[in-house]
Image (cartoon, rainbow, N blue to C red):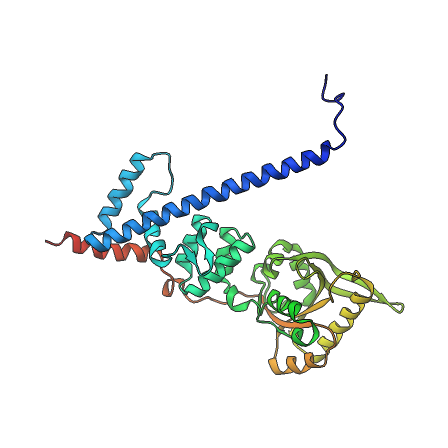
Length: 348
């Protein structure tokens, strides 16, 4: 009997889908379990190195020898280099409970942990980035990018009227999805760029744009057409936010914020609520992105607006960050510390 002529049970497609889901879930749990076991092992190794070094006073030479002996014993196992053993020691030292705040470290891949340890000094900031990395499934490159862009300082910083225009639960969630400023340095445009240039570039780089906007944003369209009483109007960018269950209208202004910008956006929000919003959607919110803003002017403008909206600045040119080596514990710094121990060890 061939597969083509085989008579299948009526419920076969549903059963197959269920089996696929179960197998995929089991495979994911196996990967997570293996990762958790690796992180526990690395923490235990780091704890042993830390304790023995403190008790016995030996330095970097012993770690180098330990690395060589372990790699000889386990030639197929990666992660036993002397540099990685030093990271393990630093992990045990900085996270004695194997946690970043309330976030269990073993939910993160090892090199995410190394990135957090070596690029974020403040423990509260580490915990924030660790939680975001798990919740949003960030890659290591994305985590690094978000740390370098100071996301923890920008998230939830936009000026909004959400507290007065949205119910409490949604107001808090909506506030947290907006940033100030937004970083558009990936567009390769100068400060003299016009609104349409920025809009076109954002659409060309939509993946990077969505990453900067944050989790939950789904792109609906640009220059989204609305017809009101026989007249045409075009929204710069329209999104749908899957967690807030609402549309998000984004308007770009290549100038400083002006009060009339809020009035225009208020009109667009009213039109989207009337013509686009589904009955079970939450109220549409707006984001006005301006080159600069005076905070008090924006506060006064938003106070008289009926619809929920926020105002934030954007940056086209990357601001020079503080030198990372002035505040971040690199592997070189760890090796220097161990080298001092080595010098003491070699003294008679």
